[in-house]
Image 1 (tube, one colour):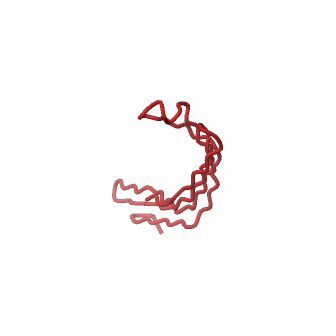
Image 2: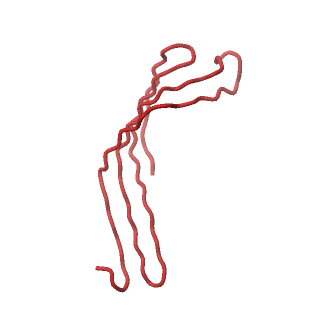
Length: 88
């Protein structure tokens, strides 16, 4: 699950600052030989990106972008589940 939004602040015709605020849930479930386990994590992610557009907007209908920057993350939840022989 990924929910969030972003702002776009142009610096010039080809470069913009793009901060984002995202809520992300990540996890895995595993089951084998009567043992099952799962880990589910929740994060608030804050990517602070520079967006580069190598072609001017007026010259092409297709305008690829390159994003560069750090992401700050804070874990807001962690859940472990397990069942089977030897798991308590």
